[in-house]
Length: 608
Image (cartoon, rainbow, N blue to C red; front, side):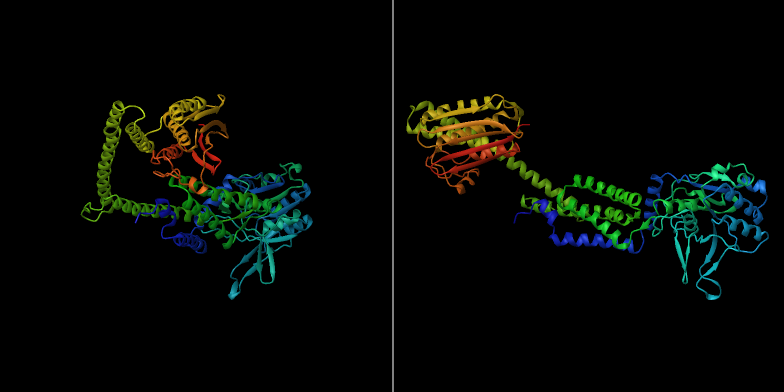
């Protein structure tokens, strides 16, 4: 039984069921990676790269008052008296600050609490941090420790870095029993006005450390900062000195360029006032995203070749990353792409292995069919070595067949033609023997040309279609005279040149004209037309003979097929040569016929 074509073997394999099963396995792999969170580290790296690559302009109304090294040198060792903090709050209030987020814990009683409470009360727009501990004391689920002074608002400062130690997300609101505790950043943003959605958790950092304008605590306290710089600003006060330890690894700085906690607070306030915190897509959405990417990859597997699939897979890989980045930046939703990317990387070589296995089976089947199955199997059972041996045996057989073919061609072109030519030289014109000799010459010529049309290389050159049609008609003049017919050509010399093999193209047109002369009835009139349309050259050859049924037209271009032949000459090779030429020129030939009306053949090939 003949082996199936390679394309069907690869695309079909053991059937569509196998490919559906592999696709289901790929989706299951992606789902398992998502469910077990095995790709979270890679997702984190991709997320951080996107955040670093897409910074945004910080809110110009945000200002950081940093407890920096210069302030510690000027005001003394940390911690400072709470009266110092009270003086700063008064300075900010007097300057007209819109809201103050004070990222310093005041959860234990201390000296000057009254001064601090008075400053906070006079301001009326200060948010202070509170402590939320889980679990709490004595088996309690939690413990909330509030500031020792009453403030306009208070918020938790719970920090939960991801597994790699990078601070990417917050809880905008923490639940402590029946109470909902906002984050300090949310509490500060609410003091300044309305905020965007708070359903997200990921912080859209504006840029690396230092992106927000910062002034020194001591400079503000000593009146060195103009009040105009503070007026109507959202001020965040916190530690920026390296020795105070309030620093975090972030997506924009990594573990080397740490960001001060007060800058993280500024990023949170900025997000809440503008684009909002970013949310994380659920399992179903991430799996659907991976499934779409895999479906595209599978479409490529089924319908494209290896080189196209490599490019297609690279485009899908880039597209998954690009879409994830676009949805994160523009839509504020993080669709974790790593599971899809890892599955793509795993499945592509699996498809390559599957393709190679199918190709190997196909090669075995074809080599067996070609007669190479008798080659000895090498020691050790090396399949590739055995296939090479089979290929060598098949190659030897093909060489032998090629030599036999050349010998056959030589026999037809010389050993048959020479006696026939000699007979024509000895017998008078019109003799029956001369007719048979001429027919033998024509059959040998058609057979040789048909074989060469299959394999001989095409010599492509610019050709004037009108001139070629005239030459073909001239070659058929003698044949037309013998049957009392005529051939007319209608072709404009304005037709663009066509790129074709002049010899084969002329032979194809001659065969069409010769066929029309044979079957065009008594004293046939053959009309040849040539023109161009839609980038193609078209040649029609029409006769007014008895015609044939549409069912017969379909069989005309098969070798040795003669439909309704009333003449003894010809074996059905002329139109087969036309079909072979059209196919090799990426063209087509067709036939339209009506009984008792006539037949029209149309040859169409590209101009270039």
